[in-house]
Length: 397
Image (tube, rainbow, N blue to C red; front, side):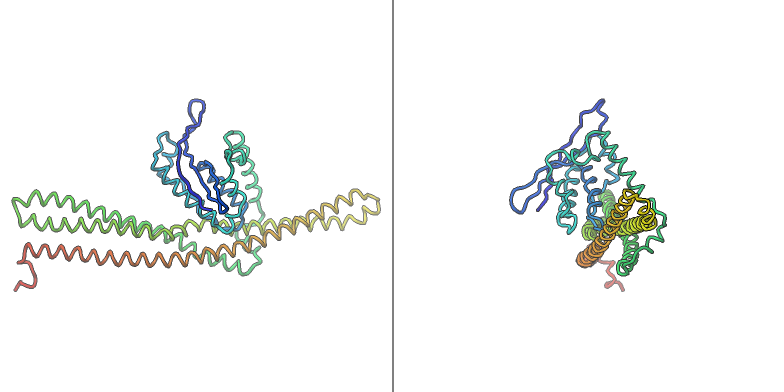
């Protein structure tokens, strides 16, 4: 259903010497298709924990980008005077993010998302990493860190990881997407910087226009021939500056699909990393199963001859269990492979659709701005020639 985030509330947790920083909580309402709604309150750290859990639950999926902790907000988030404007902007970002997750083909079905939206109690009662108890949080974080380190201690390097890939289509997709993501990562920041320069250029033009307007008023009374041209140029610069700032705003809005794809590059790399991790696990579990099966074959006759049926049964159980785990790892790896392929195709379709629309908006905005800028300076030229017809090139002999 539709998710609405509203009513941000600043909470100051009671603590000794008031050392715990305040934080914002948000009311999250989820409308259900069968009627009714879920109504809960969450804080931003819960959003972070939700993403981490869905990364594990939806391996291979390209999740929607989570709202960032902006650099300019780092101090404000840890201060005692957090603005309501900050909270409202954060609430809007969370609403967009949660609705994107609900509509996601894989994340929308996850139990973690359903628990996040439906649990009436504090999330710390279900997720230890966001518990109000500091010791509980430390234990959860330590356990997760140990697990991550253990999973990453593999005997092969990054180049050998691609050698494990046995799906030719996915290997070709990984290579092509790597080239594309590299181009996006380099190009989008440059485009954002160009828009920033365009906005600053408009602001500078407006500031110069205002100062020249003051100057024209100061000198027009004593020297009309000097004051009028300055006033004409001042009006042109003011109009030109306003138009450039509006153009920067239009381009910034049209750039959203490009920025979204720039952020998605991180999550697409994570999806391919899920596939590599599954391949590593598949090789490890298959090797363990083969080792135990070989050990069983080597000791089977000896144990039967000595009547050690208990040890033989134990080896058989271990071999059978290891084989089941290896088969499960293969199955999980195949599921992740299929998920990565479908997700890359889904994102590619959205990218082609959204980028095509955005390019049309960008071209239209630039064409309209160019025409208006030419009109502004043509009008300024006409104003100058009306005031000083002797400068009209058509009348000069």
